[in-house]
Image (cartoon, rainbow, N blue to C red):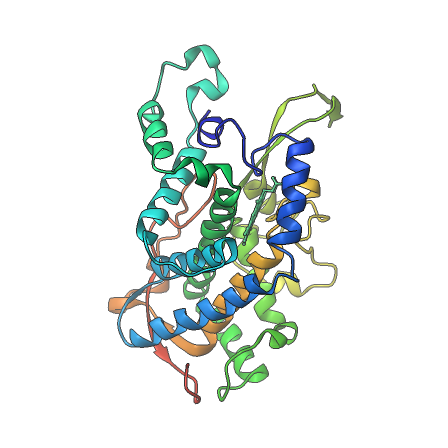
Amino acid sequence: MAIAYLTYDRQDMAFANYGPFWRQMRKLCVMKLFSRKRAESWDSVRDEVDSMIKTTAASSGCPVNIGELVFGLTHDIIHRAAFGSISHDGKEEFISILQEYTKLFGAFNMADFVPWLGFIDLAGLNTRLPKARARLTRNNIKAIIMDVMFGGTETVASAIEWALTELMHTPESLKRVQQELVDVVGLDRRVEESDFEKLTYFRCVIKEVLRLHPPIPLLLHQSSEATEVAGYHIPKGTRVMVNGYAVNRDKSAWENPNTFNPSRFLQNGAPDFKGSNYEFIPFGSGRRSCPGMQLGLYAMEMAVAHLLHSFTWQLPDGMKPSEIDMTDVFGLTAPKAIRLVAVPTPRLLCPLY
Ligand code: HEM
C-alpha cells in the first residue's frame, strides 16, 4: 500500500512491474548512470571520500557520529552522480525525507494482507503517507532520480556504518584488517583502488558485512508466470517476498550463521555476491538484481578502506566492544537502530589531504 502510494502507483523503476516501461528505464540507468564508463559517478566517490576523511581528521580525538558522517557522504556521492553537481542546499531536509520514505516503505499495513481490514491503521499510515508524498515535487517523482537517491544513499551508508560497527565489536578482526592495510599499502601513502585486489581479508570483511546486514533485507517480486516451487503452486501475478536476511543467515548453508567471521569467505569455493550463489544474495539475483552494485560496492570499499587505513578508532567514554548496540531497524532497509559513535586518531605518516 505504501509503495503504490509513494511511487505514484509504481511510476518509478524499482517498484515498476516487469514490462516495456521497466526495461526502458533499466537500460537508460545502466547505460547512462551506473556504467563504469560514466566517469563522473566514480569521480564523485573519490572526491567525496576525500572530503569525508578531511572532516574526520578535523575531529581527531573527539567522538564522531559515524552514521551521520556516512549518510552525508553517500548523499553527496549519489547527488553528484544523479544531478552532476554538488549541492548542500536542503541536504538535511532531503535526508529526512529519505528516512521517512524508508520507514513508510517498510511499514506493513493491515490492508497489505487483508484488504477489507484496511480501516485498521496501526502505523498511522493514512496520515503519514500524504504528508511524506507532498514533500516531494512532481518533477522529482517523474524522474527516476528518487529511485537512485533512495537506492544508493541509505543502502551504502548503512553498509559502511555496519562495517565499522562489526569491526569495533570484534576487535581481533579490526586489528587484522588494519594490519593488512599496513602490510599491503604501508602508512606513507593513502590507499588506492588498485590496492583492493591485494586486500584479501578486507574484501572478506565487506562480504561478511553484507551477509549479516543486507541493506535491502526483503526482496519484493511478482511471478510473471504460474509456476511450482517446492511443490507449491504459485499463480501468475503472485506477490513474492524473498527474505534475503534469513537466507544469508540460514544455518543449513552457513556455519555459526549469526557470528561475524570474515574468514569464512577465505575458503575455496566461498560464495560470491553476484547472484548465482543463492545462499548469499545482498544484491538480489536475476534481471531485477541491483543495477547499482558496482557503484555501491566501490563507494562502500573506498569509504571503509580509507576510514580504516587513515585512523585508529576507539569507542567513547571507555565503552566496551560488547556494549555496542547491535540492533537493526526492521523495514525495507535495515540500518542500525542506534548510531555508532567512535573516536578517530590519524595514523598515516603522510598528510591526509
Ligand atoms: C551496498 C549497496 C547496495 C545494495 C546492497 C543494494 C541492494 C539492492 C537489492 C537487494 C535490490 C533488489 C534486488 C531484487 O529485488 O532482486 C536492489 C535494487 C535496486 N538498486 Fe541497489 N543496492 C545497493 C546500491 C545501489 C546504488 C548505489 C544504486 C544507485 C545509484 C542502486 C539502485 C538500485 C535500483 C534502481 C534498484 C531497482 C532495480 C530494478 O527494479 O530493476 N542500488 N538493490
